[in-house]
Image (cartoon, rainbow, N blue to C red; front, side, top):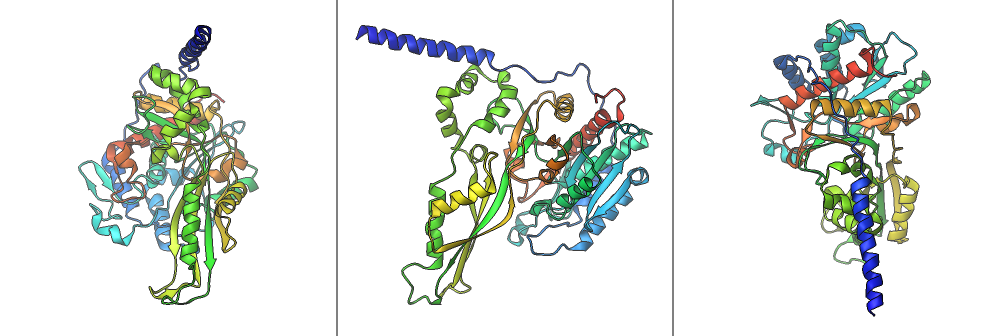
Length: 492
């Protein structure tokens, strides 16, 4: 027995030694450390604030298909860009794609350099009428109070569109001419999948045979007090995004009066299916947590490094902890969310056709087909039929070794040296998913600081952005444009 205890003790000692060795050697500091302080371009704060406020006042709302586009707000937004950025419209060529999306081309002097695409979207989500009275200021007022700009789209995503245009306007007014060709693309229906906007823009580029050095869209942010693997703020650059699909579950039953119900009504059948889905969630994996931690692991404490470096024994613990929080759980599995229910039109009528919509966000490695088959196998009920709509597979995963990723992460660190930079998997969808036929390097980042409170405002009540945040975004884009296209010393 003593020999057995010695053997077990020896094994435990070896495991601990290996664990600490891995914790102290596995993670290398890959952060960029600026040698000199970046000179932030001067910004006329009153002017850019007023221009942005007016942009928010234009209610470029996307409603779910098949609702048609309301033309007037988008055309008004186009005119606002023309009126606000004369240097851009004097220098660039401009194309209107599918009536409402915009493409700007800033021709460079060196055709040997592959062009770069910067993206944003003009449309915003609707405001629920029932919540109007809960807004501090009217959602499309663009009110500016105490250094804050209020309104729908202040973050998502008019801040990107307007900051890019302000940054380019400043650059062109300085007399700069790009060496590398740049494109801006602003979609009009990102909030409903981008099939009529960004997808058509991507097809436009494909028809011209254009391939990009990299694409940068919205997505990542500088997060504060949101990701606990390090103490510092964490700037996350999206290198991939989940896929998504909607599945409508339909239960058709004989109608009639509710006083003589059948054994199971249509809504009752759907309720059973919904419970099955919520009790049999998709399997979890720490794979996409690892890509983030690998970039900043050297800056975490020893305990965290030990756990993350030894997932051969700690992975179940990591997964169980991440599943306890909504935000982290979504990053480690394909998610299932029932979002819409429909029965009859009156309380005493049995519905002949009841339906429920399940929204799924799909982890890379799965496809819309595999997810659909999983849902059907879990429900396993012949009384239910299915309709799939608005479906997209997960994106490819872009490299962290490309020119684009390096320039973006370098510029972030120059503007926010208190923040660490790491890649991550974007939970939602962006217009950039349509551009993988045009490049292997697609990234998602906005130079905006958020915390748990401000993050919840996106698509929510009281969306707003601080003027400081917006100005920093303009300055960030100005520097990134300079590095990527205007600086003769920039790497190819």
